[in-house]
Amino acid sequence: MLSQIVAVTGVNIRSIRERLGSSAVAVVGIAGVVLVFVAVLSIAEGVKATMESSGDPNTAMILRAGSDTEMTSGLGGEQARIIQDAPGIARDSAGAPLTSPELFVVVDHPLKRSGSPANVPLRGVTAEAFKVHQGVKIVEGRAFEFGKNEIIAGRAAQRQFVGLNVGTTLVWGESKWTLVGIFEDAGAVSESELWCDVKVLQPAYRRGNSYQSVYARLASPDSFQQLKDALSTNPQLTVTAMRASDYYASQTTVLQGIIRTIGGIIAILMGVGAVFGAVNTMYSAVASRTREIATLRALGFGSVPVVVSVLVEAAFLSIVGGLIGGGIAYLAFDGYETATMNFQSFSQIAFAFAVTPKLLLVALTYALIMGLVGGFLPAYKAARLPVVTALREL
Image (cartoon, rainbow, N blue to C red; front, side, top):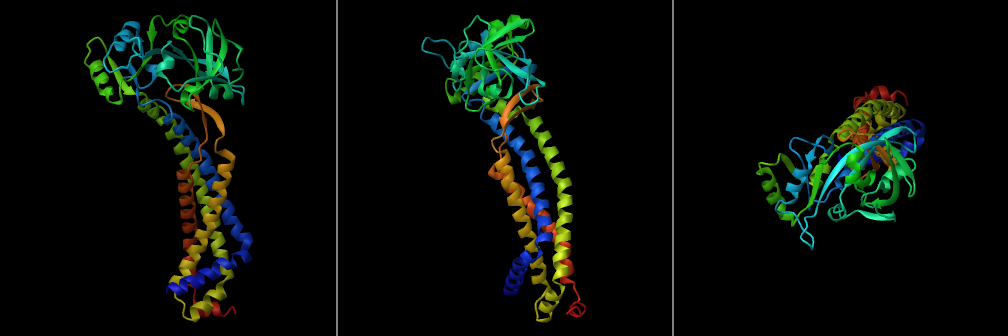
């Protein structure tokens, strides 16, 4: 039987060039589904990659208890001071704790591509922030001076929003800010933000002596539990401590869920059309080879080799379509930079589409399933073809 399967399948594959028109319909249809499928889901993969690269596991983040984002958190100045004195926090050579109480607000600023206003994160930080967030590096201009209305912008924000160049004056509300530098942070989400002096930002937005989070450098990777226990048992505090890496990993679950759901629905709807295209293609292949199949059956070939040969041809066409669609998606979208709304922080995050090997493998698997589903009924018809009736067409 194996030799029969190989022989019949070989004949099928070699005869595809005689049916290029109908075969191309199936290939193009499946390629289109894979292209859209990969393009949509590469958004979720890109957002996920950006968030996973954010946050150092050796940095703790403290929010008000019950808050799942910085936007919903709030800490008073006295609470921030108490947190800074907690055990488990690293200290500099002078004995000062490496902590950064921070304020997070959003400001309206137009996007480059559409010109429409978007929420840009504006983060107020302390002088210790650059010791806590050790990946942040000024790559253009200089750092802002504390006590002045100066800001620095992340590289990703500069690429996505209008006018974020060194020397630009920006107006938000009643305040004017001068952009004095551009920073990078190894592609982390902080590159989508603007930074300034927290003590200047607080009165500008009438926040008093308040913060929304405290970032703390851990004395060692194992000291997180010590810090968490000290904060949770302190009656003066009602806070939640987590590793910064865990916080950022959880920040786009809603956005990723929406994208994956939309991508799945689109893929299913388009997949139905591609399956019908594959069915028509394989029915056409069976019809054009009716006499050939009947002759093989008359010579002693079984129905199983015939079924397998049709399914293999369908699988081959679907894989070709999947490779074409995946290849186009990779060339067109991988690394493409854009920005979108993070529904958990209500602010824009810049990211790059990520066409990963895992995503391509999933897309090829989906293409193969579409091909096999589309080839099943024609294969069944070929196996049930009456030999005597088919031979009359000779």
